[in-house]
Amino acid sequence: MTEPVASKTEGARRKAEEARPASAFRRPPPDERPRVGIDAHALGSRLGGNETYIRNVIRALATVDPDGDYTLFLSPPLPQGPIAGAERMCRVMVRPHTPLVRIPVSFPLALARERIDVVHVQYVAPPLCPAPIVVSVHDLAYEHYPQFFSRAEVARFRALVPWTIRRAAAVLTLSEFSRQDIVRCYGVPAEKVVVAPCAADPLFRPLHDEARLADVRARYGTGERFILCVGNLQPRKNLGTLIDAYVRLRRADATRHKLVLVGRKAWLYDDIFAVARASGYAGEFVFTGYVPDEDVAALDNAADLFVYPSIFEGFGLPPLEAMACGTPVVTAKGSSFPEVVGDAALTVDPLDAEALAGAIAVALRDAGLRARLSAQGLRQAARFSWDATARTISAIYTGASRA
Image (tube, rainbow, N blue to C red; front, top):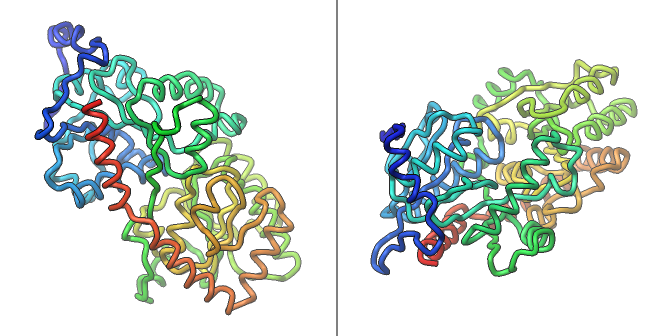
C-alpha cells in the first residue's frame, strides 16, 4: 500500500503544480487509459448511503473494467472484510483524516504525487485540485430541507457543492429527479449532469435458509413477525410519522408485529427515541443501531413488510434492496421514489400518518397483495444494475480526462 505523507519540501515542490489552470492538466494520449483517482474515504465510515455508493462503484468498476487504472484514496484504512475488486486497485492512505486538513491539503497532495488524470469525489472537491473533477451529487436535500441538517452542514454544502459543480468536468447523480433538480437549482447545463443510478448489491436477494433467518431474528430480537425500516436515525427519514402510524395500528389491534428500525444515530435522533418511549408500546420497537449489509439483507428477507417513509431522497436505495429480496414495500410518494419503485410498491404521502397506517394494514392483512408486490418488486429491482452504472461512470472518466 502506498502511503503518501508529504514532507514540507515535497509540499513546496508541488505547490505550483497543484495551482495549475485547467488547461494545464495532463491529458492522456488517445490510446492510453486515464489514471483515475477515487475518493474512497467513506469506506469504513458507516456513513450510510455515501459508503454504500462508493463501495458498489468500486466493485462494479473492477468487474466491467478490470484493466482500468484506478487508485483508491482512503481515510481511514479499509474496513475488515474484503471489498470485491479493491484488492486489484492501487490504494493510497491520506493522512490526517480530519476533513479540515484532508480536503484542502492532504488529498490534493496525494493526487499530485500519484499523477492522477481524473478524480471522482462525492459532493465536494479540493479547492486546488490537480486533475479534472467528476463529482457525484446524490441529492440537494440540504437546499430543500435545511432544517434536517446542522447549520454548519448547510453552510458548507451551499458554499462548496455549487462551487465544485461549476469546476467539474461532469456531474453524476442517481435519478432523473435529482438531475433536473441540480440543473434547475444551480443553472448547470443539462448535458453536464448524467444519471447513473444505484442498484441493489448482489447480497440483496431472496434467501431460503431458514436457519440463517432464525439466527438474524434471534440476534437482533425482532421476534417471529416484524415490520422493517432501514435508514440512519435523522429527521429526513421521517421515523416519527412511522412510529405514529405503527401506534395507531397497535391501538386498533391491526397488527402484533414488532417495528424494527435499523440505522446508526445520525442527527437529531433524541426525538425519535422520545416518541417511541412515550407511545405506550416501547417494548415493541427494536432499535438495532448500525447493521452490516449481510445482516440487513437477512433482515429484509425475514420481515413481513418493509416501510420507508423518507421525505426526500435522491434515489432511495433501501426500498430497492428490500424488493430485491422479494419483500413487499410501502414507501413515500414524491422525489425520486416513482423512478425507484415504479408500480411495485404501495406509496403514500409520507407526512400523513393515517394514510401510512392504512397502507401498512392493507399490506399486512392481504396475502395476495403481498405476493403480487413481492413478484413485481423482484422485477423492478432487476431493472437496475451496478455494472451498467459502472460502464456509464467509466465512460465519463475517459471523457473528463480528455476534456
